[in-house]
Image (tube, rainbow, N blue to C red; front, side, top):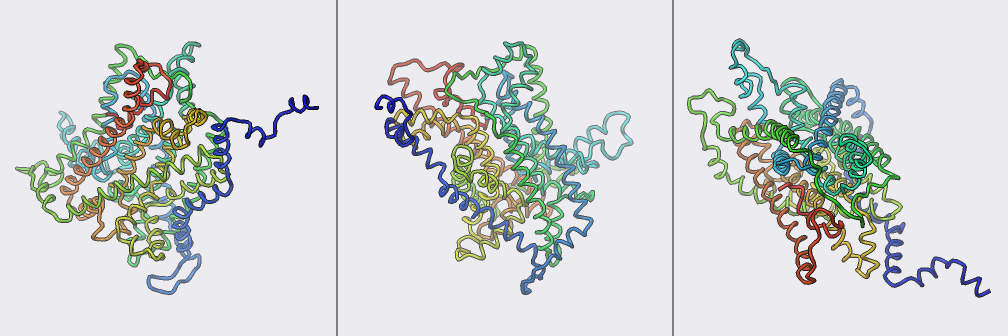
Amino acid sequence: MAAVTGLLPLAPDDAEQAAPGAVRRLIRARRSSGSKLTGVVVLLLVAAVTVIPIVLLLVNSLNTAGPGDPTHYGFENWRTAFGDSALWRSGWNTVRLAVPRVLIGMVIATVISWLIARTDMPGGKIVEVFLWFAFFIPPLSMTLGWILLLDPANGAVNQLIREIPGLGGVTNGPFNIYSYWGIIWDHLTTTTVPIMVILLVPAFRRMSRSMEEAAQICGASRLRTLVMITIPVMRPAIIAAALLSFVYSLKTFEIELLLGTPIGLNVYSTQIYNWLENSPPEFGVATALGSVFIPILIMLAIMQRLATRNRSYITVGAHTFNDEPIRLGRVRRWVVAGGMGLYTFIAVVLPMGAIVVGSLMRRFGFFQLAHPFTTAHWSALFEDNLFASSVRNTLLIGLFATLIGGVVYFAVAFAVVRSQLPTRGGIDLMAWLPAAVPGMLLGLGLLWVYLGTPLRTVLYGNLFGLVLALVISHMATGTQQLKAALLQISPDLDRAARICGASQIRSYFHILLPLLGPSMAAAAILTFNAAVSDVSTVVLLSSNDSRPLSLLLLEYSTSGALEQASVLGVLMSVITVGVALLARAVTSGRLRRPTTRRARTTGSVPPSPRSTTKAGASSRETSLTATGS
């Protein structure tokens, strides 16, 4: 009987007791990561900062009372909103602007990201840096640059084209930035393609070439390998980038306001702005329109989970990692580099140069003046007391939003991807919710939250309230970026460290976080850039003492001071680029030193940069941060 008992499998508790100490700790950690109580607590914490403002929006969309009148609930706001033909026109304009630019941008960004991260194309890092810089410049300033170039009457490019013999009688065009395709072009060059490249390049860099080599050994061409192997494996990152771009296309405001208003093209966000600008403001009607898009965003989040569930997208694991670039050929690589250089010059360098030129003009766009250029606008901006206080506020807001947001976004992404929490699907949906409403309406919801709590003196009109609003507003961007990165990293790496005796914190610090370096750097820089350039989220929550540079830029632009707005746009770009380069230098240096010290101490030869395990290659991977420098 004893012999038979010895052959029977051990019960789970007995097996755990018989396992080594490190394995027992790992089993207990996995069990705690699936605790129902822990899942409910995490879900409630995320819901507290994402659901409550939106619930207040929904409740106040039913408030039909005027400002200062007693509260009265009904469906009059909804009937007014849906009975207005402007709602349907703006909704259709939103869709017909968003879908084409997301599809076109996804194709362009995927090709550019693949060329930068996976091939030996010359100048790839330079192209990446310029795309980062295009994204750093506030959209309003880039739009001013395109107006200076492509205004149908006075645009510099149009004037040069009309100098061609035979076109002397043409007084307008041929290009018109105030048009449907002009708005799409502005979005593609200003936000859509740059942000997709920022999100996709780190994901492409983490993919081992071994899978592509296996396909080519079996006879697949490079194009077929790209379509059948590379893109399917990159599906989480591509879907996340496309969905985030579509989400933000539903909330675009500045570009449509500046380019669409002259031709009567209103979109969802500008229609809400028009209702809020009425006298008295129609908060209930605007909130009713904003509430319409909440179920749309929930469906998008569900679609993303359905598209990526039950599949493995791990490209970083305990196997041989080969990051050798794909060779395009001696002639082809320079042809491709020339094409990328031409695109970068047209889409990025021209509007950037136009912004600088605009900041030096006496009158924005008037080249025909006798002496069109001056530096007086730069001197006037530096002498403005509002500028000094706004710079200080912006740096503080950006720093704390980046630090707090990085911790929050990693925790949410980790809970969704790595934990066994039964509520992780709900946590994922909650992280998407802030993206479901325009920043102006989210700011309105947070304003009601701030004023309704005992901490209103700390939150309303203070920097901490603005930081909290920005962290909540951009939660979807940060969590989706880190989710896509975590899906590519095998959990076996840090589990192996745990079995070898490392604590949970040590395994994450030395294994997981170094591998996440590029994506975390990208998420941090995106958060800082959002904190610097966001207007709609903070406009209702700031005061004179907490005004950031983004609101100062809005004031200059709406008051007609386009020259000062161009100057401020250039300075804001310099700030964000400087922070991005500093973050890159600090991150890459911190992750390289341990490997170098160990190689010196042990006397071992450092692993080959072309073929090594991913754990050993983390310093090289991290050195290729998303800044591209």
